[in-house]
Amino acid sequence: MQDDRITKLGAVPRRDGSGRALDWVEARRLLDGLPSGGLNIAYEAVYRHVARGDGHRCALRFIDKRGRRSDLSYEALAGEVSRFANVLARLGVQPGDRVFGLAGRVPSLYVAALGTLAHRAVFCPLFSAFGPDPIAVRLKTGRGRVLVTSSKLYTKKVAAIRDRLPELEHVLVVDAGLAPEGTLSLAQLMQEAPEAYEIGPTDPEDPALLHFTSGTTGTPKGALHVHEAVVAHHVTGRDALDLRPGDVFWCTADPGWVTGTSYGIVAPLTCGVTMIVDEGEFDARRWYGCIASEHVAVWYTSPTAARMLMKAGAELAREYDLSSLRFIASVGEPLNPEVVRWSVDAFGMPIHDNWWQTETGGIMIANTIERDVKPGSMGRPLPGVEAAIVEREPDGRVRVVEEPGVEGELALRRGWPSMFRAYVDQPERYAKCFAGDWYLTGDLARVDEDGYFWFVGRTDDVIKSAGHLIGPFEVESALMEHPVVAEAAVIGKPDPVAGDIIKAFVTLRPGTEVSPELERDLMAFARKRLGPAVAPRQIDFATELPKTRSGKIMRRLLRARELGLPEGDTSTLETFT
Ligand code: ATP
Ligand code: MG
Image (cartoon, rainbow, N blue to C red; front, top):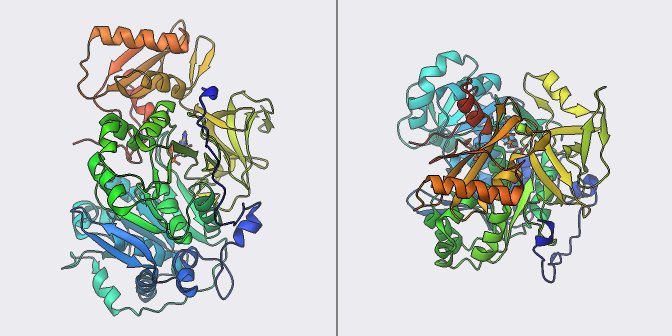
């Protein structure tokens, strides 16, 4: 895999001459800080552009489900954000109180997030597709005092659980028209609120954002972040995503999970770009059409979406003028080398994989615009980030593995600004994530002699088979090289002799018939690439793989179903209707 690198011809030098942030102190200087001192995410994202005379630039371009567009300049956004902050003030909401968002990708949700941050309350986004129970659990755990939602979502999902939530005082509905009983009309409150708001003193350590994890490995955890995180959001937006003022940027992630907030709201606005907010769901034609018509320069998406586009074929991509694209990145899951190579064919450039977690708050390891891409590698640590492969010792300490190529747990030296500061109500679990100076990520990886990191699997998903430790990603990527395979997921299945045997679940490209010959062909294909010890012994064909709403394959669910075990927490499971 490593000789397969994609060389960046005449590597792109940084055009703005800003240089690289060497450390976080230097990175902090790229931001303005509040005029009265302190650091507030909303100020850096919105108000400072107005203060610098750039308020006329377009901050947010909204495309509704029917394809109609509307623009909000930085100045207009600042006005809306201020009104929302004033609404909270009038309702008696205090700094540190929790404001939840439960809505589709509509401008009011973005205004609510930023207005909450301006008011120094804590914003917690939820996926609008969650059912009543996951909503209730998160609102309760997060002690939500205010909920911003739509009348439809309120009536369908929240009204019936309201009596389980005594701490939820105010529900604000974003749509025009009559607010359901027990709610207030946000439009009306906004109309009555003044358009000027002065952000109060904000300590960089003040809490700002609460994000629940994707629940891929178990019950989601509530990770709390502080205003200082904006330093990492900004500099990683610049260095990992190559965002420059005036760029048109599209992050396809929903703000219901951390990517849709860190890189769907905060980072792009701090970088002064125009961000696209598309209310619609995934559709290959809609997406290509959006890139073409909006002249998207930087596009941040997920491996799942990229695999779906690949399934739709490169010919479809070529029907659209995608020449505005300068940089494409993805996050959330390992990006199979096959997809990276396909992207070069379809878009004329690789998709740049990067790695991070809800807990890290921002991108930590990335393929950047300047460096060669090794398909299948998640890139190198960003400036300011110290990443290492470590072994846990029996006494609880960790040992850094210096030799390249050795698999171990991925760890980060603590101290980066967007590091989570707590798991809500789980101090012990939080403490367990650290060993001395190291934050232990729960992911396995290895690093090569050029300093590129390679994802092996989550510690929970790794398979022990006949004395080998096998990461599912390697097996899945090999299966995906077969021309008929669209997606693959691999689990370990207990076996009296081998410990675990490898079982694969595979979805096929359109028009492919399932047959015993195909199964044999796939097995032989995998054996040839991986060797008999690592190749799957069983293959099941599926129409869909179970995924979280953030697009991650839930291998634990495949395993539980295969073994007839309880399914555990399925609150984030995407259900197909
Ligand atoms: P939970 O912690 O509740 O099980 P989760 O870990 O899936 O859920 P997130 O924080 O949204 O929740 O996802 C982060 C995880 O996603 C990482 O720890 C890693 O396992 C995976 N991931 C993210 N980016 C990449 C990548 N580029 N390559 C491989 N895996 C990735
Ligand atoms: Mg996790």
